[in-house]
Length: 472
Image (cartoon, rainbow, N blue to C red; front, side, top):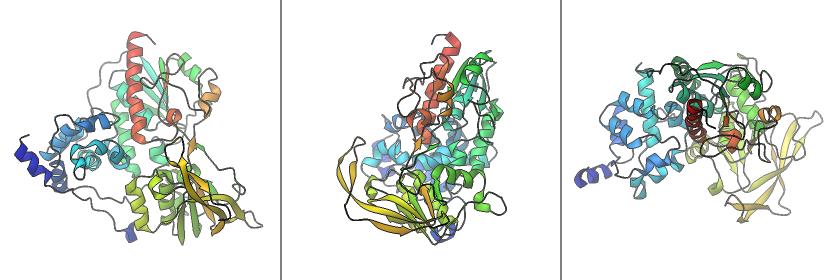
């Protein structure tokens, strides 16, 4: 690109994405952003200056050829752009919505050094949505069966990525999912207003059309063990069971009626449609005053969901300051617009209930930031004598998740660390057990969708090599 054109592109301002107004969206579960129009997408794409050394590709955990697909959008070749993305990412409509691009590809965007980076995530979403909405989704040519079979345990982002990559290499793949629908955290964890279920379902259907077999209501570790899968015709097994074990603070009153883990709260609402009670008979305590403990994306999802269930007040309680909150900036901004209250530098010390065992308040203590801890963030320290109470009848604990323990417990020779996470070779996803690989949150602990997908891609390559050569 000549310097004159580069200069002209640098003058184009970042294109906004229209959204539902806060006062409207807080009373429904429809998706908040509407997405780009064709005109806005093309204009935003023209902000890309097609660097000679595109750092954005290295910033993407699945190594999408970002400049190439953006150039295609700028030229109006939307279908071609979607297919370019799908060469390395089987879930583009999902990633375009929930990936933390601001900490990955957009963080290293060259024009972002002098202004705002190109909206890579929004453009990815646009291309994927355009392809789907115009009925242009096509199935790639699948090679002749190699004679090898792989089992994937868990139909979350890591497992679905492994399945898609392996079936495109000619292997037969069966995905075993414990719940009644595939998608993992995409279905049970992320709310409808952030990631519509129909989007996830369309991505799952795409994999099925490619030849991936998905078996739901199949709890591996109970139905079959990992060893039994290997003995019953599967040449390799990938474990992607996630981090679904709730974490609590072990403070008094956590067993009161009205105290939920974020896992239970979001799963009831997302998979069992508790937000449509009594149409769907899966009741959940809506509460008039809700407290959500935590500062990550799960806390924001829980709090913004609670707002939509019509309580009087929803408060985020977080022990550090706003600057340390791990939630995406966009999600925090949306929550603030919708009316969330924030009690920062605050930590619960006990839950208080009535004679019926129902939650009535949470007692908290104020915190101050001390020296940095192992995470690099300043350690929160309690301020003596600063205790106070917040009235509430529902509390949601969103302070992290532990590794799903079922597979390690039923596969005793599989090595795990002290937190129960499966130990793997970081480059391949291989475990200490021949033919068994793992990735995603069961390895990392609670992390992002795209990091799990990156793990899945590396594991799929390692599985393919193993199935082709027999060398472990």
